[in-house]
Image (cartoon, rainbow, N blue to C red; front, side, top):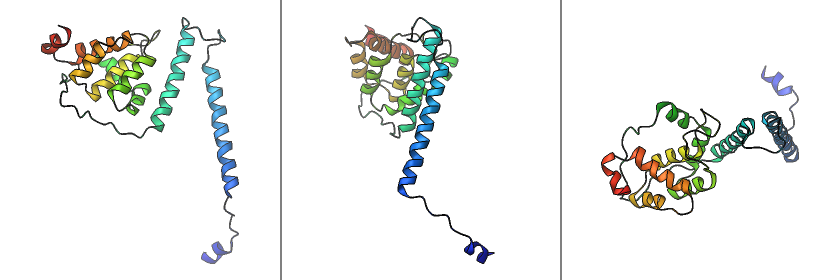
Length: 198
């Protein structure tokens, strides 16, 4: 059998140019498949998205989830704990509705936030992406909102007293202030509330 195997003609190894061409064809096929999926998800009523339309809103969240999944795939940065000794202790467990908590923890967008390793980066995400403070995204009862996903990421990072005050006193975005208030109201022990709201 060994002689038979040795006598069989060997397939020549692919040249670098052939490998590059194969890779390019694969990338092109993947991009075409992604365009086809996006076309099938796009609202058939509007050529330009109308955010009052539920179909357009679903398409928007689909795009956001695609971007979030790419960020998850590309991210390999571990979470770095805060070195500040002024950390504010959180209640355990944090009293969030179990259904909402489960939907946040399984959300692709929430998982993508683990690429953000500092409180400042999460606050920037709230500034750039949040557009309301409701627990669920507009027009949905299943997709957790940007602000609540970001706030849940802050729970894992844990804020210091100065960071909480920085959010509460922020003048650039009402949603950063809202996230600060919700963080304190939801996750900080009730005996400490007046330290921040008094």
